[in-house]
Length: 504
Image 1 (cartoon, rainbow, N blue to C red):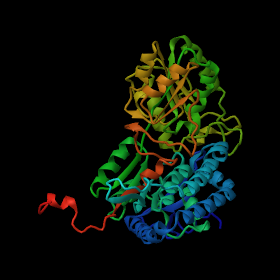
Image 2 (image 1 turned 90 degrees about the vertical axis):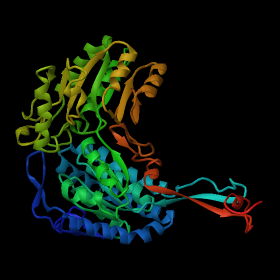
Image 3 (image 1 turned 180 degrees about the vertical axis):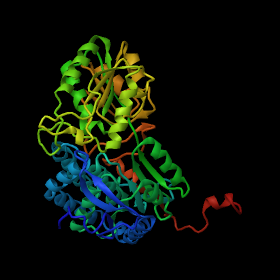
Image 4 (image 1 turned 45 degrees about the vertical axis):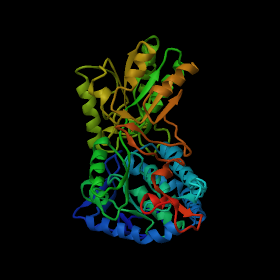
């Protein structure tokens, strides 16, 4: 199967590609040069209805399959993804602009590994051990699928986020309708086609490519959708939660972030500088866990700023398909302008140390002015309550602020509405233990920032949402627990009946 052919349409419903029935065509654009990767017709609400119906029809067979059968299907899927790894990386780079080395070494192998993990996790859906907890009854717990899951994934990691949504849901026996971001739907469609190639039954995984206001809101509100899983901005997440309440759906929200990067005065300065550059520029900074606020204890502050600035100036912007390119464009021209707006407004109250401009020439001669490129940007002298410190910029921008006491650094780290990820840099185990305990975030790294693994959960605190992706914990999101209780006495007239009628 050629996973990269989309001529039949951008909807994947009941095991086949179909065109959308929306009113207007939509261009998937390569943000490196503005060229058209694919023209698609977006989904209408009728397409969403068809996808939900297909998922509902597939549910009895799939939820009734043994864990072993679902595990075998996911094992085959991991193999199919691995066989098509090069195609996935190429298409992911074309639709997002991310460097091919990131797609090849992070996005695609991470997705294959995640699939292999859930192939194993599918066989480990356990409840509490059976027992006679009342003395007269045997109780046990069943963990069951919820039903049709409506998932909405973002544009920054289209392949990985599609997998994070789909894999735990289907491993637990649910069926899925996924709406990817219309900017970047292609690898989600490829993933669904790979599911079919792996022998996963038609209708278990469905994709609707449509606008959020149309397809997304209809999916979230659909009466036959039992659960909604959303990854995206906090503002849109609030709207998703509001819509889901009308039909009392379970919701799983992975929302925005503004991750602090806290450097204590005993940290390895070289490690912290290199870590900050990598963690702030991964995926052009379009990562909800990216380092965005570096708090550096005053003895190291100036050296840290100088070190980051030096490395930022050496970052190689250029053609994303060039394996030597470090930084590609942002996902769209509109998003580049949004990032530039944050920086331009900050010039009135802070210092732009380096960067702060789009365009230019790439390391390989690429005319960056044709694409949505933005230079790595380092900002200092901003106040804690300023827009660049508090707002989610979602671009290659790092703000550095000094702090004095440990208490001050940890207070500043927690001083935003978000709580998705953070890191602490220190050589003192007691400092690190305190930081990991007191920083309010779903993940706290020590002396590193960004690595994720399939076996560990990902999810936020506060306005960063709730629920977990990846790991065995994510299966809790996609299952419901049922208590089953058997009478063991065979006595017709139970002693407790006297509390309702009669005497002892």
